[in-house]
Image 1 (cartoon, helix red, strand yellow):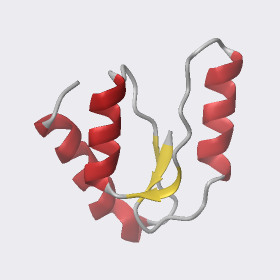
Image 2 (image 1 turned 90 degrees about the horizontal axis):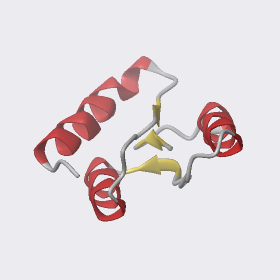
Image 3 (image 1 turned 45 degrees about the vertical axis):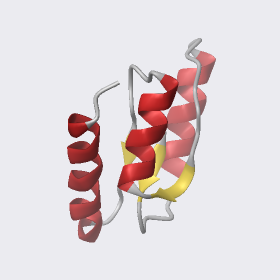
Image 4 (image 1 turned 90 degrees about the vertical axis):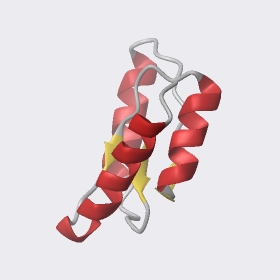
Length: 76
């Protein structure tokens, strides 16, 4: 669970991470603003089955798309 690069609004992402953890998921919370390539690399290295991304403002939509592209190009 993380926010996209540039987005520092972590409350929603933190809440999702906590709820998933309470439900028994093994959760890694990456904090705020992780770069797209690092998110994809981390997900691949950990064998992630789910990646949760948070984005608050529309100006971060291109960063969200970048993460999705990196994840698709480097599947776990």
